[in-house]
Length: 282
Ligand code: AMP
Ligand code: ZN
Ligand code: FE
Ligand code: FE
Image: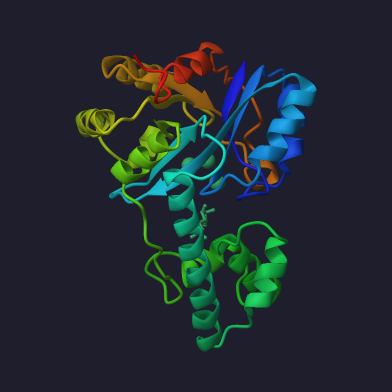
């Protein structure tokens, strides 16, 4: 069993990279990838602990791309250390997030809500600041009854507090990943929100842009959905990969390795991905 989709405190997970690796070892994983959103800051720690515990480790991240009607996330695997085009794109995304966060704090204050940027930063406790931290402060200060209420009235799309972040397009993300020695994989393909034939066309286009795999074995997908996606991957000569999308206590139904209980991603996905690494292809 392997798990190629894991989040830590370096993005929006509740467990440190070290702890994520320990949970994977305890669950019986032979290899894992750390795939924090828009960053690689946990990769070094996770690699060290994986080595200590004898676990195969794949350095990765997950990038949110521009897409409608649904959501498109691209996973990057086997990112080379040091500088590169992917690292530069991630840096740009971090700067953009940081600007958005400061503007959002000011906007909420202007709306007369009891919130300061300092409180939000404290709520994030050193990890990447996101809207869930704004929501937590609004709840703590009595301006919202729950996280969901905060999103519904104050932070979600179409509410007065909504400030959009610029998104990278999929082609740019895939090219940047490849430029940094990484293999790009379409995460949880069903969140694109497309019907069968449109999904097929979208995957074909991404494959043409250099996509290497499709996340077929996803924590929350049913056996039928997983099988359908594996067939889709096969049709476009993409590696069928998978993972739990573990976020610790923030998504309590998802466990490392086993997802909602029945996940078992085939170990062969790692070697198949490695064979797609730019430079490894012949
Ligand atoms: P950010 O990347 O800072 O814009 O925050 C995105 C995160 O906010 C997502 O990963 C979700 O956890 C959460 N989120 C976004 N929209 C909603 C919503 N409508 N309801 C609840 N949570 C949401
Ligand atoms: Zn996440
Ligand atoms: Fe995702
Ligand atoms: Fe994820």
